[in-house]
Length: 325
Image (cartoon, rainbow, N blue to C red; front, side, top):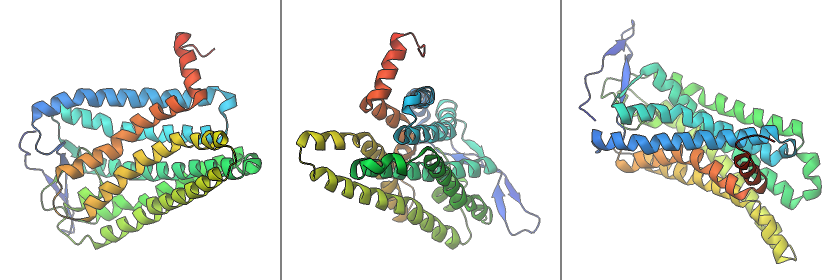
């Protein structure tokens, strides 16, 4: 990337706040424009793969009435979130890498930041709902149909959407109350709350406290309940008399476990390296890229490979030349 130009600022009439007209995205620190250019092509491939994979899962579940079951409905929600999340981040990253256009308007940056964090919270909630579905299906199979009815699944989806919106809606506003009179270079390929907050030259105590509160009360609580669900599932599986039945029961959880690990391991790593403080390093950037780019690509591959109904439908589509019959 070329040396960042001076960024014009927007000073408000009361003279107390200074906002830049735009921020400058860095991409990958220490990597030259030639390397960024070539990295744009695998990024385009990842975006195409994420879009195709998630759209395929959504359409298959939408068209196949026998897949209108809680597990698959939650999977459709997860794929929808991944589809939107990849569309919020990858196109701008591709333009940054391919053409070297670093500028992102202040308001657009805040909007992207809100969508990234809110969608991540929604994905966390859906992963928790999927863990609850597996818990009921394995530990209380006779009650599964009566507990997770169609209206209940819809309410859970609405609750996930509402919680993600409500908890993260204040973030753009508490960032707008800050002045940005230091560097205006965002050290990632996209806008994150922690990264923007570090650019402020005013007190960020509110941002730090609220950011910690939502990460613990949203992702932290979700991960605890997911872990607790799997402890109960593992106990129920180990109590089965037949080893074959135990393996068959636990095999239904493999895809979800992969999705949980792909989502939470980079998230925890990113949270830890940010909480340690100090300047943003290559490790921060790599962890953030893995956290945002990997799940939308990996989830449809894992579920497509491990879920028999989806796998057979995809094979049937290709054998019929893309027709739905």
